[in-house]
Image (spheres, rainbow, N blue to C red):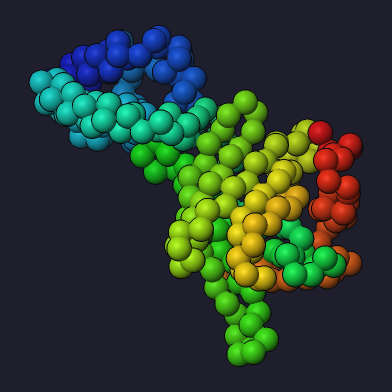
Length: 262
């Protein structure tokens, strides 16, 4: 029966981990509810089944299918994962996935303009999870004064949560895969919509020189479309009403002085 296979498969997968409690913490499922799955008293919802499958690196159909087929599929994917772990950074991303998941979503990114000390650049970035890894997609849309059109830049990367901080490493593919990094610290609850930190990258002007700046990520919850979010991108003066006081104060504070933010 499918139910018998489901119970056997779940117990087999959990036996591959340190403990059922850790499995529940990592997935974000209530342990009492998960125990009901293991005992056969209830079946996971479609959403929870997908989360469980994603955590163990198998397909939904594998968990619901025969135990023999699950073992074959799991062993094959485990071998692939072992090869992947030969990469010295394989275990870095995503780091603590359960703590990283609450940060998924869309953000506005604020930092000082490299060629204008009185200007702030505003970009958009999206964090989403795929196959147990959190990816970033940053979009920059700056006005090109020569053509009166917007110049679009896209950077794709990965996100890690380590020691209470978020690390984002991405690549701008059109410029010889130039890398950039953001290191962000979650703030106290009263400022939970913000992430404060530092970024470094190769500035487009002048001459692709290394550049570092304080940076603020602000969660952008209520937007009707991605196009609407992109309209918030650009370069703005420090006194622009688009830059709220919390962001202005952090970006204007002396380098290394974060008093009042953490």
